[in-house]
Length: 168
Length: 424
Image (cartoon, rainbow over all chains, first blue to last red):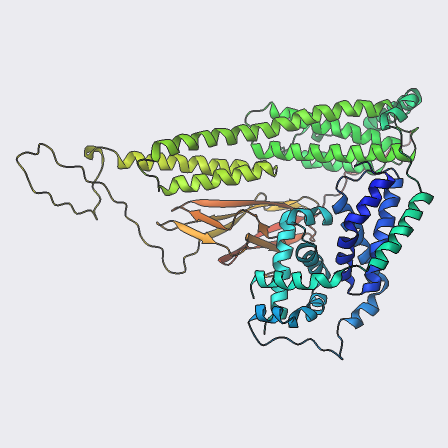
């Protein structure tokens, strides 16, 4: 796909929210998500200026975001480990099996981000892409440069892991 | 907790991640400024850039290609094809030769030559009618990958320094076109095989729809055809070939069953479980035809299929991929229907269990019917990263049964000794 400035700015309008959402649930911090999401588009423009074509814009942007999140983790490894467990607000595992009722009450949703943070990063990534960013398995495979089968497996395991975390 | 409930939870929290309007506006402004400072200048077409430098670059690349090819060690493996015992040596030698090339030009020349070699292999295999479809598909895959590698390399060289690449890029374009034709041939063979199976299935359905519409063989063949269609769409020609063969086998079985049920009494043995009591009547001149009833032995409780792992070669040289097949067989005299709550059917690991490595999950496949003595297989080819010695494939039919199979990895053979020149 050949991209000029106008097209690229339109792409920003289309994808800014999605990329921000993805970053937000990967790094669990509003400010850091804003920085990373902004950096995605600057990096993408650098790629365009270098004369390289982009076949799948969505996959390309998510891929840059994924790489920047990984870089972020590497730089902030110690800090990230500390923030997973907040002694001021321990995660409460619900003892009711009526999850739907809890959802309506907004009880679980608030802790859901922290449950997500308990997942290994590879699992969290596919969960966010599938259930929050609403990408299909095929689209996720394109973003992460792997096969649809591998993504199906990873999602399956991620949900299993999440169910274990959520199990009363 | 159900998947649907989890989805609801995520829908709920998604709304928390709405980007600030302030942030969006600020980023938009910064991006606009950045774009203005770093404008995108559309480059010339790749070939247009290279063509003016044809003469000098042809000479350089020509010399490089001659040097690369003539200094390569001559082995019997050079003429081998995929499926031949020496083929993997041929590929290894190419990698070794490539490692000694330093300049971009020489690398490009070598990769162009390698592409021509892969193309020759595909064509040579296509001309051999007895070559298994799986071998042809492997050769086609190698060709596809090599075309991508060479294309990417030429583009990188052209972007970095347009003076480097020239007429050879146009020549490579011709190779690409020929490669596409060869790859299309492999694909069309699989598609032709699939269309033939589909036609036979339609014929069988027409014949059987009035006689035996619930024929289980027919149902199984319909499932196999649908699976083959999906596999062809995914370019999994090896899997499609297996599915088509299974479908044709079941079509034949369906037709045989239908023929058996409509045969006259003189050619059919009455079933021992059938009890027919006929009152003799002076008006009747012949006995009515008893319809034979198949003896169906019910499955034992907790029945599971037999599972085996078949390794293509029990002795593998280090750096070769591990090629094996997981097979399940219904050893009972009743059909066996396997269900999976997810779409993952088999899993395996090397040496460790139950840590899983590579589950096979087919999106359209979470149920499988095995007729009595029927088998189903999954093929694997995986790179190995284990030390020389004996290892074990631990395989699992998800939710049903497990098995294992040993194989041995031999160390990578050392290079032949270099002859020492004697002083005159």
